[in-house]
Amino acid sequence: MGAHAPYLTLHFKRIGFTQEDIGLVMALGTSIKIFTNPAWGVWTDRAQSRRPILMTMLSCSMLLYGCFVFANSVWAAAILMMVWGGTATQVVPLSDELTMHEMRRSGGEYGRTRVWGSLGFMLLAVATGWVMDISGQPLFFAIFIICELAALVILWGLPNRLVEVRVAEKATGALAGLRAMFTKRIVLCLGAALFAAFAAMTYFVFLSIYLDTLRFDDSMKGLAWGVAIVAEIALLLTAGRFIERYGCRWLILIGLGGVILRSSIYAFVSIRWVAFLASSLHALTFAAVHIGAVHFLTDEAPKGRNGAVQLLLSATMWGIGGAIGSLMAGYLAAGLGYRGMYAVSIVFGVIGMVIFLPLLKDRRPSAETDVAM
Image (tube, rainbow, N blue to C red; front, side, top):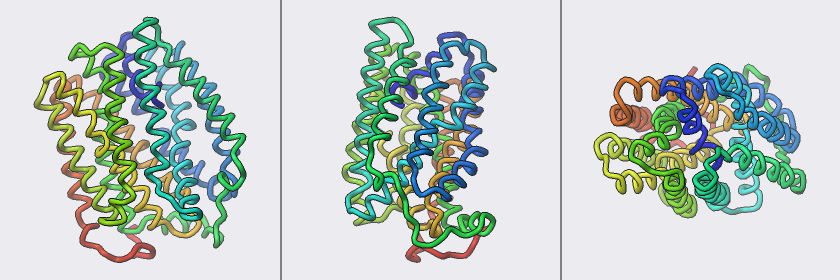
């Protein structure tokens, strides 16, 4: 993803897409998760081994991504993004589920394990920008495909115990299981995560383009993303101790505060070095919210439904949130400019915080709560 996130939208801008076009393409690419995540969730909850599911996702992602080179019209890019988005982006929530399962069985901290993914993202983001500056070509396509192929080889070689999830009790029926996943606390957490995602899309979709307006070259854009991931790694290494002492709810709330702070900087400060360093707040706006939500929902998930609940989080944040957030970001950037777009993003962070605050007062120890829907 380090070869993808910083550079795909920049590529779209350079081939002539407008801000609205970019928002539309990214929105359609993430909206498909609303429909594909439940299907992946059914397969996930019925399969003990995650290997064939992950290999299917990675294979489809690798084959489809190269086609973006030929997608020079908005609708070609949008259709391709929808097909690709329905496969590639599900790898992360399933990997999170396997990681949490292994942590509970063997010990360890989720954050410290997640560091390796962040480190890979950082190295690829920086290296890809450097390669593109030297070559003058959008070589991030080739770099992404090579990394996907390497991931497939590694996945194939993993021992069975690392890709299998044994459930103590058989999962409930589809309708009952779906209802059980929508407790009041899960709904509040998902609601807060949704507004965090709205704000995040102004960053993920338009940060590189915004930095372009500040005259950053591609290698500096890559470094800005690298700074974000260095800060994320620092948080990942300390998140376990923070959660143990204060709980995952406070981590989520601090993350939402980070959303407000970063959006405020981009909205009201246009100094280059400040914009560069503001990327470090990614540690809060993404890592804190994501890790906190993964921990919270792992504790809240009904038995036999953890994989489905993690996919529900992905569908909420990067499906609904990604689709609506990308679309809004595109129109806000076109109508209000980038600084106006980030000013609206402040409001998203405030709403997310207000939604989440009741969970700080609710001190019941996870598991069965009243169904909210």
